[in-house]
Amino acid sequence: MNNRLTQASAAIILMACMSFGSPLLAQSGSADASSAPVTATIIAREVTVVDGDTLAAISARELGKAGYAAQLAEFNQLVVDAPLTPGDIIRIPILVAGEAESAQVVFVKGTVIITRPGAAAASTADTGDDAADATVFDLERDFDVYPGDTILTSSDGYVSIEFSSGSVINLQPDTEATLSLLACLPENDDCIIEITTYKGKITSDVNKRDEQDVDFRISTPYASAAVRGTMFDVEASEVLRVGVTEGSVDLNAQQQSVDLESGFGSVVEEGQPPAAPVPLLPAPVFKRVPTRMAPGDNVAWWPFTDADAYIARLANDEAGVETLASYDTLIDQLEVTGVEAGDYYLLLRAVDGNGLRGFTSNTRLTIADIDNSIAPVNTLITRQGQEFLVEVQNPATNAIGYEIQIASTLDFDDPLSVDVNATGTAVFRVDDDQVFSRARALLDPYTVSAFGDISGSDD
Image (cartoon, rainbow, N blue to C red; front, side, top):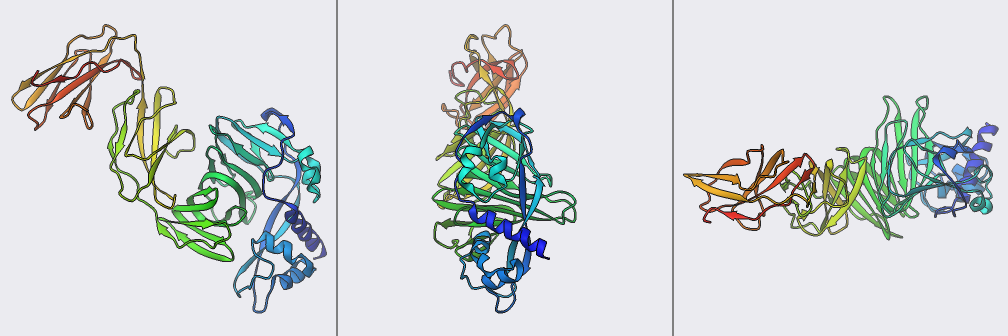
């Protein structure tokens, strides 16, 4: 019993000495130089509040000294004299010595660094020398992330980190977060993961092993979100925004909490309790997805009247773990730029007036480059009853086929598009009396010519 109390007390002291904000950069290293830090992992056990309990009483009973009430309050994100209700849960930290458990980087793009306290900083409550002992690593795939590590993404940085339970967090550009607690080995009764974030955007997909409960928490200096098996978003800046798209989250600030079920979000301003839950916007419906997108082409969707903006991510995978680029737009269409030709997924969400992100639409996109050394091709339209025959007039010698578009207006706002073989002909049946056409040569699946001149059926 005394040994348990000593360990718990040490954990409380350690947590009390942690301050918000990232460690200063000192030594520099590469991923090859990383090794498991000689540190300690802080996990927690839970006690249930009984009638008449105070934090001082719990501290005296569980830790052997009422004087630890202030540290216990900080660990639970309460004020020291907060009134407790029978049935409430208070978390008691436990210090587990030895090599720390780690999570793993499964994807990284752009500039992402980790600052890691040195062995001396990790094993003492005196944080005065932390900056001198800190080591800086440039992140690479398969890099191990340990408790105490602080991750910082640059303006072009993305990183996805996977825990042994299968849970994944995705940090987007200009995000700063620390892996505060990690105890998630298969032999543990519970999987405990705590992330402290200071700024930026994090998306989470929380998974659990069979028969192992998950205690997943994302905290900021003034609020925390406790997860119960869910997919959710956190955006920290002057305010904290949390939106839940699967499962549920208990959002807590100023000793008040709100339950966020799937499809709802809330905003927390510093020093204020969480705002009442509001419904998230539904997934946008795509209006136009081009057969392929080359410079100048746009994806379009049906707009929401109550959306302030739309955000999109281009990723290698449907879940968006391997995100390559992000886009913001105030209108209902988007030109995708800044990536190489290839096949991708576009994940699109609407943003409401609270800044909360709604549900996600997902579509496959083929991105192509334009080869300006290939002369554009023109088309000729011939009307045949209710059908329109479109023929390429000046075929390219090295084209494997053509993309032919037909539209009812000259702006080609919503064209019909087909790929045809090297013969360069297509027949369209439409109800319009007049149509317009254009075409471009396909040199390979990801290289095209520019569109040629527009032709009209009355030309």
